[in-house]
Picture 1 (tube, protein in one colour):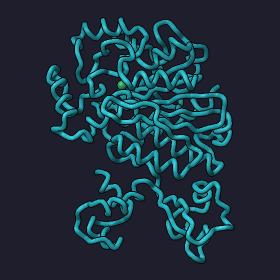
Picture 2 (picture 1 turned 180 degrees about the horizontal axis):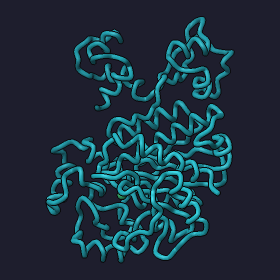
Picture 3 (picture 1 turned 120 degrees about the horizontal axis):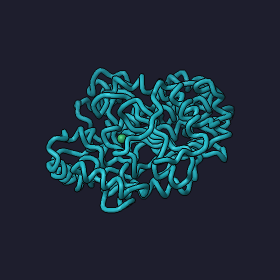
Picture 4 (picture 1 turned 60 degrees about the vertical axis):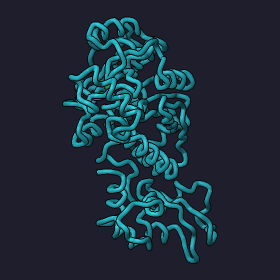
Length: 400
Ligand SMILES: [Zn+2]
């Protein structure tokens, strides 16, 4: 499935030509600019709607398959009793914004964030960094609390399934906030008042786009990656790619035992840029890791979660550092997820984001390895991964 198919499915159109006919466009069966403009609301999950004579919220909600509550949330400055003919409303459409059945790309990430931002205007969405190849890296903040937490995903390119995990959680949480509902048994409004959540759903968009096919085969970036991968013929291309597009493994690029990481990885043969396990020329020499450190310093979170895939395991220490409360909370995470709380093997125990966070702040920081099998994990694992992590994510929001 791709974006076009997703939009058509959501629109309930059996074919592109049929969709075009329905929209009053020439039914060419080709997705031209006008057609894409008509398809866009089905990707964003909302449309702009011009109020007509006789309209009210329940009539508009019925027409677009949404709810009055969703309309009120998406138009916070609008008095529902004072609609003016011709004014424009944001109308959420009747399906979740975040798809969980197609591979994620940077473009899809941005569509989702645009859609979520329109449907839930209390989300703050901004870019905090930019990759070497010009992809801006977004973060989302939600909450009013002085207690701050930071969750991140997709440091590793072929672990992109962690991006829809965080996005789906964000959407579920935002909806629960807007409906005064609960999430994993917790009062969402209370969490919103108590904690500010900072979310980085895709640390490594260049790498993710390589793995999911958005970096066009034959393009200079793709050719460069292919050239780097040829140094490591045993690693499948591009599915085996974990690094950013410059061939640096971002989760080995943080100043936390970086020299030890380099020694370990060099001993394994990872001595130059490639698909994985190259630590970079120096700590934070990559824009993605440098931006993560800057963001973390600005946010000053009490806790971080870093999402990876492989092994259904939770790592919580750096060397002998055991931040206060970290073991107990880690055991709670293990209990709600069924994952194992574990010490990191020495060979991979350095220069990760979690390592840097614990070393710098002496506060609880976790690497959560979801799922098992060969990366990238198939989306068939998504429902199980989401179920297991809903509890972890909510507990991390709630704190002790
Ligand atoms: Zn990883």
